[in-house]
Image: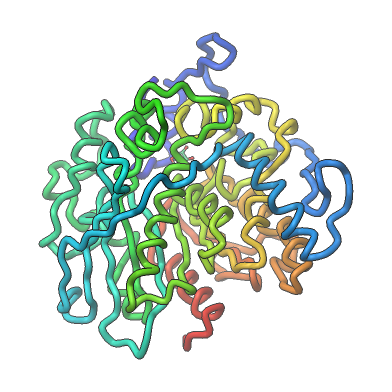
Length: 444
Ligand code: GTR
């Protein structure tokens, strides 16, 4: 199986690469079915009820939800979808690499910090890039998210080292370079600046902390042997995975919580106001991090699609069959059971959104990103609503997906559909900043 690069897939390229792929599900090398983009062929399905325990008993109060249903659902997600996140072993260490008071043209303080596990030297650690506005009257809220190509790719500042883990990914992934990718390591500087735009975040009075997702696990099927999953397992790279062991999404989500641990030690940041954010596969990780770790005060999913915000029971765009064949390392091994049997899965993704309740969740889709199923992403948000209502909060009022480019709709759960392709850009960030500022009671 070819291992794709985690960069943008233009639709046509994606289809072409899918056609070449095959799945070894059921032990036979069968070609993967083409994606369905016809709404009339999505089929009918019944979603697992948010407000009913597995034993059939109703969930009637916020207390019922918090004490009984939420733990039950977290456990179902561990067993069936993302796997079990292990306890941290030993203390974390935060080592400041450098700090500048004059970053981003003098508007920000910049810190670079290494997070390591003292008792697990096998894991090299996570390098965090943090920008905090210089103009502030107290601790500021912060956006926390992983990036696809190294911290140096998220900023126009040129004095950051090029991520050595990302260079390793390029060398080891076996994937041929794609059109539009940076040709040389040097040209990867600022390559994904538009996905972050730290100047705009800092200009809005917020901090932003990011790290390369490959610092946790390089994104190919054997990447885990060098990453945090091996380091936290007693058998290391010899581990044989059990059905409910964690996958790469679990490892990336774990890393997001470690960044939050670090932010809790930074006096300039208000750790009570930290939003976890992610795009695409990193949106899946952000949702799983936000579902597990209630310290994140806001959860943001951008184009997270299958295994993220999109309902898996909807047969539209990417499916469980395709995602588990192409990315066998992302989920708990048991998730493979639901290939062509999504109905048998005890959860669907509205419950992942519901696990964030009563905290605010923003879901962003892109019109041309049919692969991620914008309607399925919207419906997850909509069907999480009953849980929010138990807490006296409103989610998405209408079951109809809003129109393209009409801006975000919804109260504690919000949804927007941006024109254009699979990506995260200034338009999305405008929505997320507005949403967070409203919930953090900051002036718009
Ligand atoms: C695609 C994958 C999606 C999404 C995307 C990305 O290839 O099928 O689930 O995660 O990659 O992360 O860019």
